[in-house]
Amino acid sequence: MRQSRWRGLTGALLATVVFAAAPAWAEEPGPAQRAGKAVDKAAKKTGEAMKKAGEKVGEGVETAGKAVARAGKKTGEAVGKAVEKTGEAIEHVGEKVKPPGDKK
Image 1 (tube, rainbow, N blue to C red):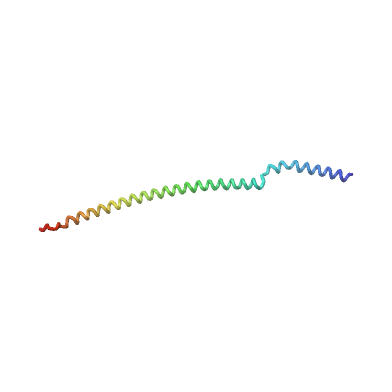
Image 2 (image 1 turned 90 degrees about the vertical axis):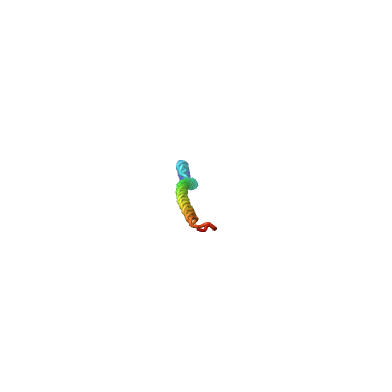
């Protein structure tokens, strides 16, 4: 009888310890919760990185646009000067050419 009484007490004590410790285990995150937190953290970091990359791309596009505008202005000025010189050269040649029938 003593043996069954010890078994009963041991079983009751073990059940009390397990059930008393169960709430502590329940508060700890499980593998799925830890994985979910890791995914959320990675998604947040990826979002921040994408935002920074988007800002950098925007800055690059703006810089390129300014460079194209400057190049266009310089090209326009160069073409304008070339046309002006060509016009002056044509006028100069035209002054030297005698019309047919004008014999002096």
